[in-house]
Length: 169
Ligand code: SF4
Image (cartoon, rainbow, N blue to C red; front, side):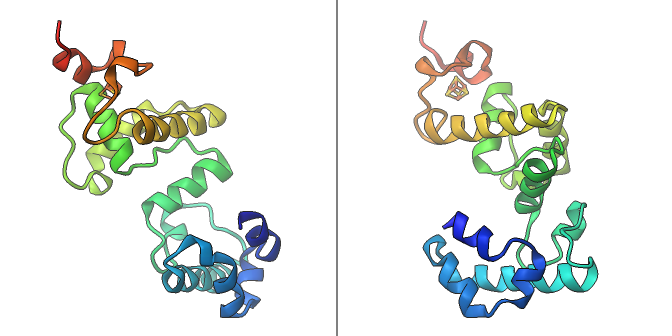
């Protein structure tokens, strides 16, 4: 699906000139088709109208199309441009919170303090910044799960506050 998407819509201009049904057909496997079609339509319109058809290079500008939020804007800057940003979501916040014994707020993606903490951990080297984010996301999805973290087999348990506090001697 991704190959087809990028071959048909390689830039904002291609999105802007496409028919709604063309976008809809390609992204159908992703689900939430109506919402995502509207977002992609707006990405094409806004970026062509206000940024000469380029993908803008700031988080605030990237977030202008409907329902493009912090996570998507940060992912764009991190993966496409190598900015050392943190992809703050529930998994990322849970893993980091456990490792450092940090009490995360209920909505970590809305907390300036959380962004400051997580960003201080991201390496400045672009490939390392990408690898760091992907590693934390994988750890949260596969090992440090919400209800039953597999601490005994976790590769970073020696540095984890949660493991140290909860293991039985
Ligand atoms: S040791 Fe346990 S709590 Fe700590 S990061 Fe690994 S799985 Fe999560």
